[in-house]
Image (tube, rainbow, N blue to C red; front, side, top):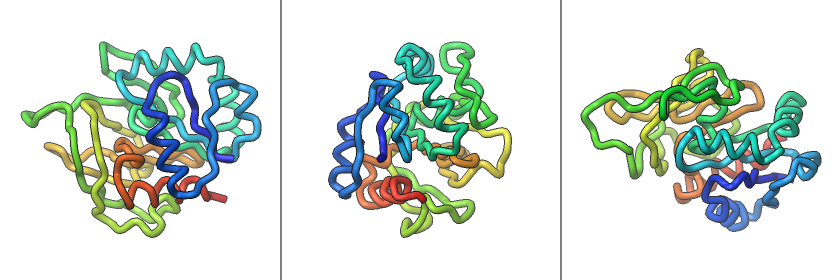
Length: 200
């Protein structure tokens, strides 16, 4: 079963609709005991890092989520959900994240309009099951002022450029994160979601 974590942060119905449209079995979960049967976990998120992290802690699901991740269950973080996987974010000072992928979340530092809103290309840095049948340099839909900066460049699967290169897709072991919104990214995004939801 593919489960979408409902911790009151994120556009859950767009994500669920995208999976339903692709014929992917999925379920919204908001209680820790519902995570036990999860084969794959999607962690969405919009808005600010600090409140998202607080909502996740207050949801009562964090310990169960940690156990599933440590057991090797695949997890895909989306937008702020991907940022939460890092050690910390500089949004609103310094906020502590989950620390599952070493690195920080940094604000864009350039003269371009912030946030970045709209379509941008993703340059694949290495082969990965997440990219199966997704062409290199495909466009995905972004809405963000902050971006992922992993400590280890080996954890970067995809790069985008907005003023400078930044990590758009990351992976460490059974953890993936995408800074864009695949559920709003038409065919390429639907294929990426389907790839994750059929990982074995």
